Length: 226
Image: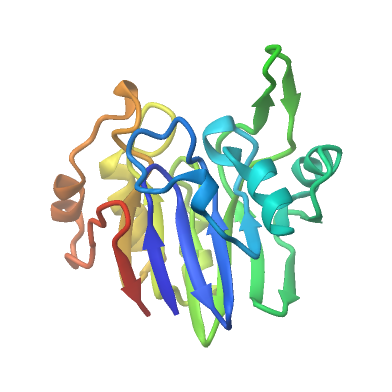
């Protein structure tokens, strides 16, 4: 399974002949190596409704005839835009042909701001567990530290975890490092930092905070094989 990082919280997964993208905030993302018009995807996974996570979902989904998997309120809102969706809720999982998706809790907000400045409530935010080829990836989305991360790691041994470190809107580096100890993931990658001034962080300092030094800073476009 090939997994690549593309700035902010954008992650791509290639598995079982499918291309999956998580939180495709591309247009307006100064840190990404991607161009929205060049991205192909079979599946889009969304952690929550904020614009810097939904990003280019509608355009990508329509152009690629991609399936969007998200919490039920967010998937309903996107279906109104003519997008093919599969709604879920926290704690639920579903076996797709490309792998199993399970949503976990996350402590954050979830709303979408339209071009005319209307705020659309999009249900609860979520983390994403993705399981395929005998491997488990955890994308925490935007979240604070919470103690049940220990249960997530115990119930679903994690090969690769993507954790926000930007502070201000999510966990900062110290809390994210503690989250990593709870999750016991084999490899931890920092996300959601340096895109905007309030979330400026040094990802290498985060790596130094990890007791097991099991972190990896990925530059936009860099990939791992798991």
